[in-house]
Image (cartoon, rainbow, N blue to C red; front, top):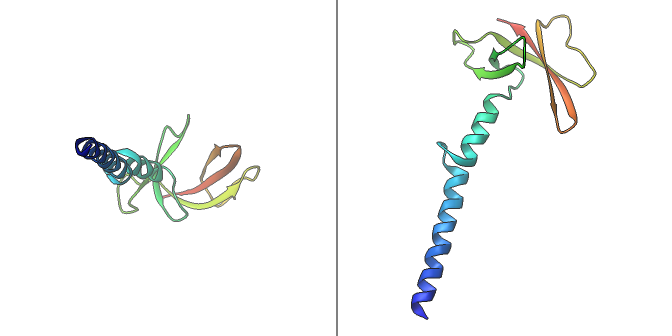
Length: 107
């Protein structure tokens, strides 16, 4: 009976550790996926480089002092609206039926 209890506790302990590690390890698992997603979801004021600007553009947040920085995000407008004339570039994004356009100025 005692051996069974020790085995059960060990299994639950290992499972608990794996879940904790998956959710918090910055080099893998959920935390890494969230960090990667955040790097492609700029906020107003962030500088980005844009991969495949003429096809399926993907903005990647970079340091504004970096030579990679191409654009700075200036506005986020809801679906159906266009970026103002003061912006040089826009990326339309649709997720789960909701859409918006990220508006950028060239650096």
